[in-house]
Image 1 (cartoon, rainbow, N blue to C red):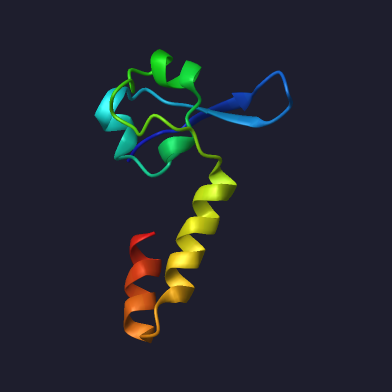
Image 2 (cartoon, rainbow, N blue to C red):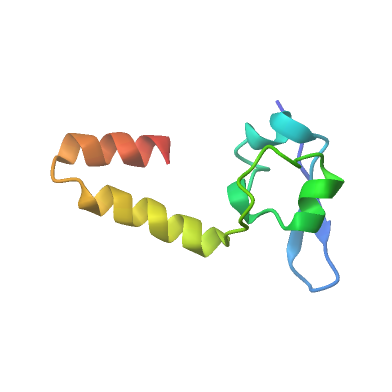
Length: 85
């Protein structure tokens, strides 16, 4: 079982510290933010070249996933999308 280290950042938000870097970081759901990693974060944790160039917020990513799910007319397809999101 993986241990997660957390603390508070200067802005008061909870910050999860990851022992992972590069592609390993992207495959761990607790740590990955997908394309929401800032350019500085990408350089710090060796994600340069592993993500699309554009930076998206977590909210924008969630909105895209939601739109893709509701666009499906078949309930089974919606369930599959929910399970993989």
